[in-house]
Length: 228
Image (cartoon, rainbow, N blue to C red; front, top):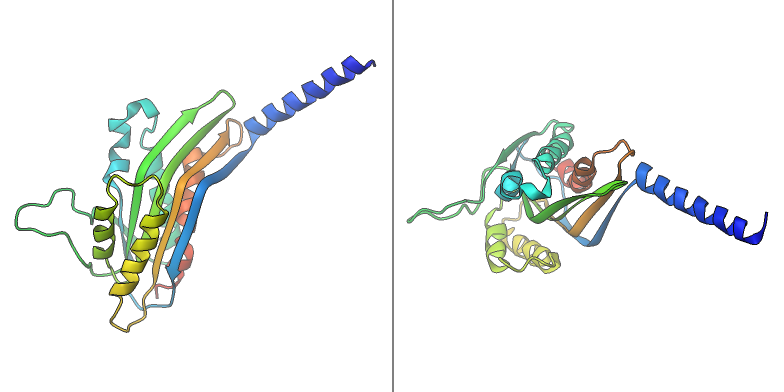
């Protein structure tokens, strides 16, 4: 075989290998991420309230052009349930953050029992010939003492400035730590991802949103272990 034929075969091998890789594999990546935590065993009721973002629930109706179809909502709720129900902790999805505050009312400061707050400023999905991508920026906050006020106060300061969630996460953790002054054990977790992304091959056998959701829910496992 002459030199040009060998080069052609090499190029064909590289091309087929690349297509095969894109078709049959899936991987998870992110622009940046970080975690802040204070974890210790606490005695609480075996029930966790998860404040689920209304924006995610409405995304398939508000942005139909992104092809979301509610897949992210169902996937991340399922992944979070698995984390807690596998430890005999019941989960209630609710809207702790008020959608509308009526005159004379004020947002909650503390709730009775552990709380998890999800903040997802954006999400998206793109369909390619060989693969699909799904992505989201996510901040996860968990408080064993039901401290909602820390999150609400910091979120108000960062409204409209969510390109980098690192500063948001750091200030949220510091604020929550400062409010835990009772001397009792407590467990607090703040995790963030700037553009968490999954590339999923069309023949990988995986679901794009399920992969992304499992990556988020996995970070709750250590915190869930502290709830006794």
